[in-house]
Image 1 (spheres, rainbow, N blue to C red):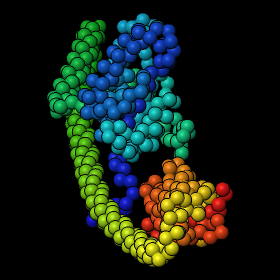
Image 2: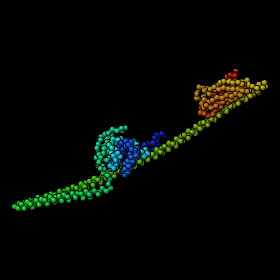
Image 3: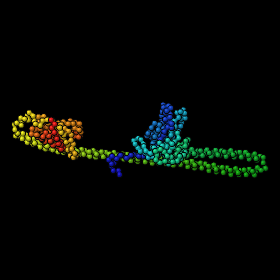
Length: 485
């Protein structure tokens, strides 16, 4: 239906039309190029100029060339065959003025079929059949397909020879093929065909006059013979003269009737041929008008299809852009919600850590002054700890662990490692109070290369550090270390 849209991703419909294709190729071109390239190119250039001028004269166009091959398109099968025969005749005349080694002969194939339009070029079986027919043609000859013959029979004064159903390479079905016998003239279109009628009548009058003159000569001869006979046979003159005069009158009457009948037949024949010629011209005119209407309709349909395809593509692109914009807005809103949720969880964790730190500070203030003095010089938990950190992703029940060394000096804990996903430096920094309370801040990277941070809290007991917490994204993390020195 005209209002239906092309589905997303579907290719645009191919434009097609019915066309008559003329394919021409030079016999032995490669061999001639191998002998003398410049001479071959010069001769070919002259042949091609003749080819192009006659194609234009017959309202065709050359749509593709490949080396010595030429492909032309015609709206009329009659004009295509006329053009082919006139090209061969013109090239034979030109070859007569060339040296034997310079003579260049074309093979030509003509086919009427459906073709695919791709810009200025034409593709499809309609073109392929013309090319294959050309390869089966004798140098200087022309072969046509059955589809062309069906269109031009009784329209051109040419002698066709049926070659039968021929099988060609890469053509699925056999092709009915004809060859045009060389030396038969083409009936070329003439703008004033009615002038033939007076010429035919004039020719008939000349024939009749000649016949009368011949009859008069015969009659005169018989008269002379009769005089000679009358002089020799005077006794029989009266009877023979009367019989002779009667016979002569009868002969003259018969001859006159025959002449009038012949003149009438010639005039009728001339009229009949003139009428046939007018009928043929009218048929050609109607055929051209029909072909033009078909071509105009195909062109209009192709234009409308192209416009509809362009409008559908534009509408699909707009819908896709709107869909992508909506998806991007939703994604950003979700990311913002996730970030706010992460910040909320981080704030809650920091609040818990801060509350724990306040409690620890209050406990530390209640502790004995001796403990305070001892912490100024060195905490009891200083040293080197070996251990690991473990992630607990939300979508993976299996933890992801890696080794991290932790060094504690004067209650300050530091650890570093290289992120396996991004190969970037990551760190753990924090404090270990004298009462064993541990607080660590993590600075690391996500698998996508984005910065991330988290908080760990815990205690030291029996030279072992045990902590737990979470990343900003909410994923749980634990840390465990054992004092080595």
